[in-house]
Length: 243
Ligand code: SAM
Image (cartoon, rainbow, N blue to C red; front, side):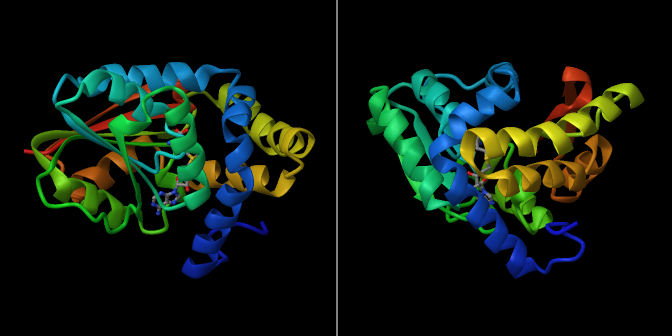
Protein backbone atom coordinates (compact mmCIF):
# COMPACT_ATOMS: atom_id res chain seq x y z
CA UNK A 1 0.00 0.00 0.00
CA UNK A 2 1.23 3.45 -0.69
CA UNK A 3 1.64 4.45 2.95
CA UNK A 4 2.40 0.96 4.26
CA UNK A 5 5.14 1.26 6.81
CA UNK A 6 6.99 -1.85 5.74
CA UNK A 7 7.91 -0.15 2.51
CA UNK A 8 8.70 3.36 3.69
CA UNK A 9 11.74 4.39 5.67
CA UNK A 10 11.81 6.14 9.02
CA UNK A 11 12.14 9.69 7.66
CA UNK A 12 9.25 9.14 5.28
CA UNK A 13 7.02 7.97 8.11
CA UNK A 14 7.94 11.00 10.23
CA UNK A 15 7.15 13.30 7.30
CA UNK A 16 3.89 11.47 6.50
CA UNK A 17 2.70 11.73 10.13
CA UNK A 18 3.61 15.43 10.24
CA UNK A 19 1.76 16.11 6.97
CA UNK A 20 -1.32 14.17 8.09
CA UNK A 21 -1.68 16.05 11.38
CA UNK A 22 -0.92 19.49 9.90
CA UNK A 23 -3.59 18.71 7.36
CA UNK A 24 -6.30 17.45 9.76
CA UNK A 25 -5.65 19.73 12.79
CA UNK A 26 -8.42 22.26 12.11
CA UNK A 27 -11.07 19.58 11.60
CA UNK A 28 -9.65 16.98 13.94
CA UNK A 29 -12.28 17.24 16.68
CA UNK A 30 -15.32 17.14 14.42
CA UNK A 31 -13.87 14.22 12.46
CA UNK A 32 -13.18 12.35 15.68
CA UNK A 33 -16.81 12.66 16.74
CA UNK A 34 -18.06 11.68 13.30
CA UNK A 35 -15.79 8.71 12.73
CA UNK A 36 -16.24 7.17 16.15
CA UNK A 37 -19.93 8.17 16.47
CA UNK A 38 -18.84 10.09 19.56
CA UNK A 39 -17.61 6.93 21.29
CA UNK A 40 -14.05 8.28 21.61
CA UNK A 41 -15.45 10.45 24.42
CA UNK A 42 -16.39 7.33 26.39
CA UNK A 43 -12.98 5.71 25.77
CA UNK A 44 -11.32 8.89 27.03
CA UNK A 45 -13.58 9.15 30.11
CA UNK A 46 -12.66 5.58 31.04
CA UNK A 47 -8.99 6.51 30.68
CA UNK A 48 -9.43 9.50 32.99
CA UNK A 49 -11.22 7.32 35.56
CA UNK A 50 -8.52 4.65 35.52
CA UNK A 51 -5.76 7.25 35.78
CA UNK A 52 -6.88 7.98 39.33
CA UNK A 53 -5.61 11.56 38.93
CA UNK A 54 -6.37 13.70 42.00
CA UNK A 55 -5.67 17.20 43.27
CA UNK A 56 -2.00 18.10 43.17
CA UNK A 57 -0.95 15.41 40.66
CA UNK A 58 1.63 15.97 37.93
CA UNK A 59 0.29 14.73 34.62
CA UNK A 60 1.71 14.55 31.10
CA UNK A 61 -0.52 13.95 28.08
CA UNK A 62 1.86 13.14 25.25
CA UNK A 63 0.66 13.16 21.64
CA UNK A 64 -2.10 15.13 23.32
CA UNK A 65 -3.18 16.88 20.13
CA UNK A 66 -6.27 18.98 20.61
CA UNK A 67 -6.23 18.49 24.37
CA UNK A 68 -9.30 16.40 25.25
CA UNK A 69 -7.50 14.57 28.06
CA UNK A 70 -5.46 17.59 29.18
CA UNK A 71 -8.69 19.59 29.62
CA UNK A 72 -10.14 16.94 31.93
CA UNK A 73 -6.90 16.62 33.90
CA UNK A 74 -6.66 20.40 34.30
CA UNK A 75 -10.05 20.36 36.03
CA UNK A 76 -8.93 17.55 38.36
CA UNK A 77 -5.46 18.54 39.54
CA UNK A 78 -6.35 22.03 40.79
CA UNK A 79 -3.88 24.89 41.20
CA UNK A 80 -1.29 22.75 43.07
CA UNK A 81 -1.10 20.23 40.26
CA UNK A 82 0.68 20.30 36.91
CA UNK A 83 -0.69 19.36 33.49
CA UNK A 84 1.54 19.27 30.42
CA UNK A 85 0.05 18.91 26.94
CA UNK A 86 2.84 17.76 24.62
CA UNK A 87 2.76 16.94 20.93
CA UNK A 88 5.29 16.78 18.13
CA UNK A 89 2.98 18.71 15.81
CA UNK A 90 2.73 22.48 16.08
CA UNK A 91 -0.66 22.71 14.32
CA UNK A 92 -2.31 20.16 16.64
CA UNK A 93 -0.77 21.82 19.70
CA UNK A 94 -2.04 25.24 18.58
CA UNK A 95 -5.61 23.96 18.07
CA UNK A 96 -5.40 22.31 21.51
CA UNK A 97 -4.13 25.46 23.20
CA UNK A 98 -6.83 27.64 21.59
CA UNK A 99 -9.54 25.19 22.66
CA UNK A 100 -8.33 25.11 26.26
CA UNK A 101 -8.10 28.92 26.35
CA UNK A 102 -11.69 29.13 25.06
CA UNK A 103 -12.78 26.86 27.88
CA UNK A 104 -11.03 28.98 30.47
CA UNK A 105 -8.46 26.26 31.22
CA UNK A 106 -5.62 27.58 29.08
CA UNK A 107 -3.55 29.00 31.93
CA UNK A 108 -3.69 25.73 33.89
CA UNK A 109 -1.82 23.75 31.22
CA UNK A 110 1.76 23.92 29.87
CA UNK A 111 2.23 23.36 26.15
CA UNK A 112 5.38 21.63 24.96
CA UNK A 113 6.34 20.62 21.44
CA UNK A 114 8.13 17.31 21.93
CA UNK A 115 8.79 13.95 20.37
CA UNK A 116 7.56 11.00 22.46
CA UNK A 117 10.79 9.15 21.61
CA UNK A 118 12.97 11.57 23.61
CA UNK A 119 10.87 13.45 26.12
CA UNK A 120 12.47 16.65 27.48
CA UNK A 121 11.54 16.15 31.14
CA UNK A 122 13.52 15.09 34.23
CA UNK A 123 13.61 11.49 35.49
CA UNK A 124 10.93 10.39 37.98
CA UNK A 125 8.80 13.52 37.51
CA UNK A 126 5.18 12.65 36.60
CA UNK A 127 2.54 10.75 38.58
CA UNK A 128 0.58 9.89 35.45
CA UNK A 129 1.36 9.88 31.72
CA UNK A 130 -1.26 9.32 29.04
CA UNK A 131 -0.89 8.74 25.32
CA UNK A 132 -4.21 8.47 23.47
CA UNK A 133 -4.32 7.39 19.84
CA UNK A 134 -0.74 8.58 19.59
CA UNK A 135 1.58 5.60 19.96
CA UNK A 136 0.74 4.11 16.58
CA UNK A 137 2.04 7.26 14.92
CA UNK A 138 5.39 7.11 16.69
CA UNK A 139 8.20 5.62 14.61
CA UNK A 140 10.27 4.10 17.43
CA UNK A 141 7.64 2.87 19.88
CA UNK A 142 10.17 1.07 22.12
CA UNK A 143 12.16 4.30 22.54
CA UNK A 144 8.94 6.18 23.33
CA UNK A 145 7.83 3.67 25.97
CA UNK A 146 11.29 3.74 27.58
CA UNK A 147 11.28 7.54 27.58
CA UNK A 148 7.86 7.61 29.29
CA UNK A 149 9.00 5.03 31.83
CA UNK A 150 12.06 7.16 32.67
CA UNK A 151 10.10 10.34 33.47
CA UNK A 152 7.41 8.61 35.56
CA UNK A 153 7.81 8.62 39.33
CA UNK A 154 8.20 5.24 40.99
CA UNK A 155 4.61 4.18 41.67
CA UNK A 156 3.45 6.22 38.66
CA UNK A 157 1.21 5.01 35.86
CA UNK A 158 1.32 5.08 32.08
CA UNK A 159 -2.01 4.75 30.24
CA UNK A 160 -1.88 3.90 26.54
CA UNK A 161 -5.23 4.28 24.79
CA UNK A 162 -5.01 2.94 21.26
CA UNK A 163 -6.78 1.07 18.51
CA UNK A 164 -6.18 -2.62 18.91
CA UNK A 165 -7.34 -5.99 17.65
CA UNK A 166 -11.11 -6.64 17.54
CA UNK A 167 -11.88 -9.81 19.50
CA UNK A 168 -14.33 -11.48 17.12
CA UNK A 169 -13.85 -12.34 13.44
CA UNK A 170 -17.17 -10.83 12.53
CA UNK A 171 -16.38 -7.55 14.26
CA UNK A 172 -12.94 -7.58 12.70
CA UNK A 173 -14.40 -7.91 9.19
CA UNK A 174 -17.03 -5.23 9.74
CA UNK A 175 -14.39 -2.95 11.18
CA UNK A 176 -12.02 -3.47 8.25
CA UNK A 177 -14.80 -2.62 5.87
CA UNK A 178 -15.63 0.47 7.86
CA UNK A 179 -12.07 1.71 8.20
CA UNK A 180 -10.89 1.02 4.65
CA UNK A 181 -14.06 2.10 2.83
CA UNK A 182 -16.01 4.50 5.02
CA UNK A 183 -13.17 6.39 6.73
CA UNK A 184 -11.40 7.62 3.57
CA UNK A 185 -14.77 8.50 2.06
CA UNK A 186 -15.78 10.51 5.13
CA UNK A 187 -12.33 12.11 5.11
CA UNK A 188 -12.89 13.14 1.54
CA UNK A 189 -16.42 14.45 2.02
CA UNK A 190 -15.94 16.27 5.31
CA UNK A 191 -12.29 17.31 5.25
CA UNK A 192 -11.54 16.99 1.53
CA UNK A 193 -8.61 14.82 2.55
CA UNK A 194 -9.05 11.13 1.70
CA UNK A 195 -5.30 10.40 1.94
CA UNK A 196 -4.98 11.34 5.60
CA UNK A 197 -7.89 9.09 6.53
CA UNK A 198 -6.49 6.29 4.41
CA UNK A 199 -3.28 6.68 6.44
CA UNK A 200 -5.35 6.46 9.61
CA UNK A 201 -6.91 3.16 8.58
CA UNK A 202 -3.54 1.72 7.60
CA UNK A 203 -1.80 2.85 10.78
CA UNK A 204 -4.54 1.15 12.81
CA UNK A 205 -4.04 -2.10 10.91
CA UNK A 206 -0.27 -2.00 11.50
CA UNK A 207 -0.39 -1.30 15.24
CA UNK A 208 0.68 -4.08 17.65
CA UNK A 209 -2.17 -6.10 19.16
CA UNK A 210 -3.02 -6.24 22.87
CA UNK A 211 -0.51 -8.89 23.95
CA UNK A 212 2.31 -7.49 21.79
CA UNK A 213 1.91 -4.01 23.24
CA UNK A 214 1.79 -5.48 26.74
CA UNK A 215 5.11 -7.24 26.24
CA UNK A 216 6.65 -4.11 24.72
CA UNK A 217 5.67 -2.19 27.86
CA UNK A 218 7.16 -4.86 30.10
CA UNK A 219 10.37 -4.73 28.04
CA UNK A 220 10.42 -0.93 28.46
CA UNK A 221 10.67 -1.49 32.22
CA UNK A 222 7.10 -1.36 33.53
CA UNK A 223 6.71 -3.66 36.53
CA UNK A 224 3.14 -4.68 35.74
CA UNK A 225 0.92 -4.14 32.70
CA UNK A 226 -2.82 -4.77 32.41
CA UNK A 227 -5.13 -4.02 29.55
CA UNK A 228 -8.84 -3.43 29.15
CA UNK A 229 -10.59 -4.08 25.86
CA UNK A 230 -13.27 -1.60 24.89
CA UNK A 231 -15.87 -1.82 22.12
CA UNK A 232 -14.96 -5.45 21.47
CA UNK A 233 -11.22 -4.79 21.32
CA UNK A 234 -11.44 -2.10 18.63
CA UNK A 235 -9.72 -0.04 21.30
CA UNK A 236 -7.63 -1.16 24.28
CA UNK A 237 -6.39 0.72 27.30
CA UNK A 238 -3.03 -0.55 28.58
CA UNK A 239 -2.00 0.49 32.07
CA UNK A 240 1.64 0.13 33.06
CA UNK A 241 2.94 0.68 36.60
CA UNK A 242 6.46 1.76 37.39
CA UNK A 243 7.91 0.04 40.43
N1 SAM B 1 -4.43 12.42 21.96
C1 SAM B 1 -5.31 13.14 21.07
C2 SAM B 1 -6.66 12.50 21.05
O1 SAM B 1 -6.79 11.40 21.61
O2 SAM B 1 -7.59 13.07 20.50
C3 SAM B 1 -4.71 13.25 19.66
C4 SAM B 1 -4.49 11.97 18.94
S1 SAM B 1 -3.99 12.16 17.27
C5 SAM B 1 -4.75 10.79 16.47
C6 SAM B 1 -2.30 11.67 17.28
C7 SAM B 1 -1.33 12.74 17.73
O3 SAM B 1 -0.04 12.15 17.88
C8 SAM B 1 -1.17 13.89 16.76
O4 SAM B 1 -1.46 15.11 17.39
C9 SAM B 1 0.30 13.81 16.34
O5 SAM B 1 0.89 15.04 16.06
C10 SAM B 1 0.91 13.15 17.57
N2 SAM B 1 2.22 12.51 17.34
C11 SAM B 1 2.58 11.73 16.31
N3 SAM B 1 3.85 11.31 16.44
C12 SAM B 1 4.30 11.83 17.61
C13 SAM B 1 5.54 11.76 18.30
N4 SAM B 1 6.57 11.05 17.83
N5 SAM B 1 5.66 12.40 19.47
C14 SAM B 1 4.63 13.13 19.97
N6 SAM B 1 3.43 13.24 19.36
C15 SAM B 1 3.26 12.60 18.20
